[in-house]
Length: 375
Image (tube, rainbow, N blue to C red; front, side):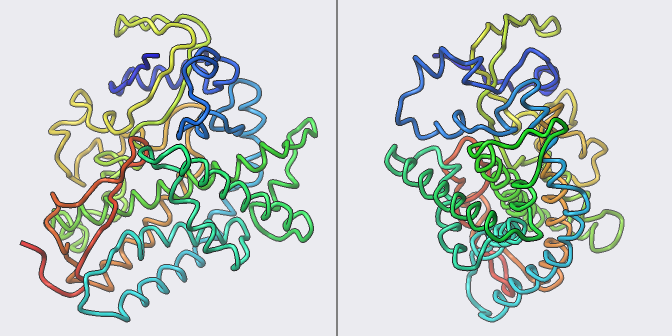
């Protein structure tokens, strides 16, 4: 089956707001699910999950309301001291081995949000290693069917174990809050919805932050004049974060959406047939030349730096966005303050992208903490 890849920012916003565009493949993508999705398709999890990411209409409203009750602005704000402590601990670990090429993605950008999510979930320390192993495979789009199935089984087993433990011994954490959460009608989350909602937070609260930190670091190291603007005062760290989100969105494509009926988009003259899969290209949206002048350039002073769609748009706007931004606002100044001579250990063009058309980051981010940049 052919799928639409939508790259125009205006059209993306219209589709994301359209009331007849669904993310529920079970209900509105039946041809794709029944006829065109192999049983062992590595990306099947992205279609099969039952949470706010894939819900539509009243079901989406119900699930999002539950999320908002459990994942409040206050809960995010309360994490700030924890994020600061984790950041300091990771930087101390990096500083303990000077003179080497450190992988800043694996040792900092990846670990920081993973440890924050673990704290948010109330994850017992004995589960940290298994959690870390399983999370990495969720966004890979080049792995075998067997590997994808193993990753899915592993993460579901861990989350089921976590839920069982929090049912027995509730705590002041997101998992316990979701277990206790009800919507206004008193309807509980089903067991699958509960576990799939935790899975959603892993994607929304972890992978996005990893890639945002990754690209922000690379962009600032390869554009030292932009970094100087921040350090001298004319620009801010938030300017760099927002421009990074525009220039290199953490999620490149997100799958899938399905029209619930034939939709004619008058501005573009396109017709989206009922049930036809739609992939939204957030990566292309941030480079739209109709919105951003010299769109391929990284410029933290551009007026349109906040005009990005990297956290979505409309009813599915990412609830984890404030947490991702908060982590970046804490991590970036701490990193560049601790290591003012930070430099890439390889030329930027040699950095290898992750093997995924969903996740947008690098496989490794080798840097020298206190040496001269690679030529």
